[in-house]
Image 1 (spheres, helix red, strand yellow):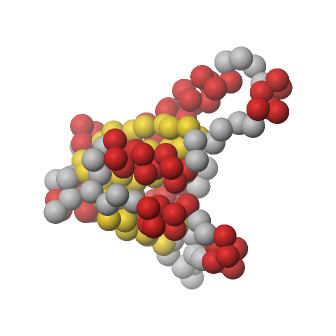
Image 2: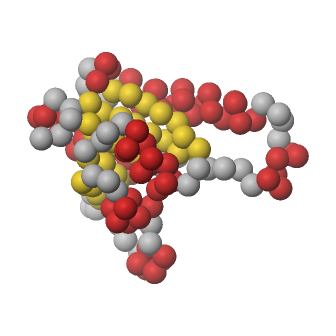
Length: 145
């Protein structure tokens, strides 16, 4: 069924990612698929570059790689079946590029409950669904009781 599952991870909103990770792990367990976690760092505007130290990008990359590896280490799945990657750019472009790079046949993405701004402006999850080279499962956060 699935051989390669990609899960975009927002390191600043792990509560949204967790339900998607849970579904991806369950699917990977049923199908023997590998799991690929990707985090996309945003590009810093050029106007701010003079205010940060020269090592800023490298430090940010290292910190993000550590965080995503920490997320992967806590997953109840064999570590050799999990890969992690930190990319930089626009979220949906980089997620779609990573899906192609990993030959993913499923993307499992977490999403907020829709709000009016989402209906009018779209979202990263919506753009991924529309342009993905493979199937996409959008996992909503459970409603708070």
